[in-house]
Amino acid sequence: MVAALLSHPTKVPQTPVPAAFPDTSKNPIEIDTNTIKLLERLSLVDLDSDQALDTLKSSIQFADKIANINTDNVQPLYTVLEHQQLQLRNDQVTAGNCREELLRCAKRTDEDYYVSPPGNIPLEQ
Image 1: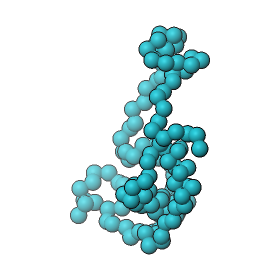
Image 2: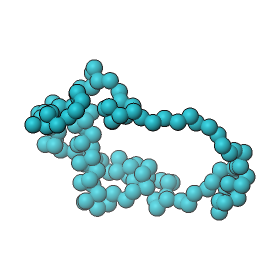
Image 3: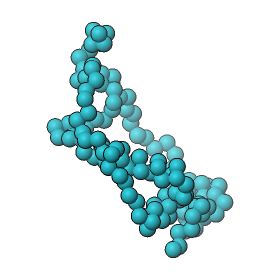
Image 4: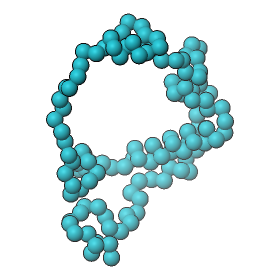
C-alpha cells in the first residue's frame, strides 16, 4: 500500500479518484474560418493542416474539461511541494542604469525599445 510508504500526512489521494467533471470529448468542436484566421494572426501559427486543427480542437476540449472542475473550497498553492520549504531570497539590485549599454547590443531599436523581427504571418488584414 502506498500510504504506508509516506512518512508524512498528505491530502493527496493515494488511490485513483473517479473523474468529477463531465466528459466533453464527445462534444464536436466547430471553429469558423474567421476565428481560425484571427488565431493565426494573433499566435503567428499556421493552422492550415488537419493535424494543427485537430491539436487546436483537442486543446479546446481539454480546456473545457478543466473549466468545469469545481474549485470551491480549494486553497491556492504557492508551491506544489507539500512538506518542503520553498527557498526564497531577498531581491537585491546589484546592477542597474545600463539601458544604453544593453540597447547597443540590439541590431535595431526604436525609442529605447528593441525591435524584433516580424513574425511569419503579416498582421494587416
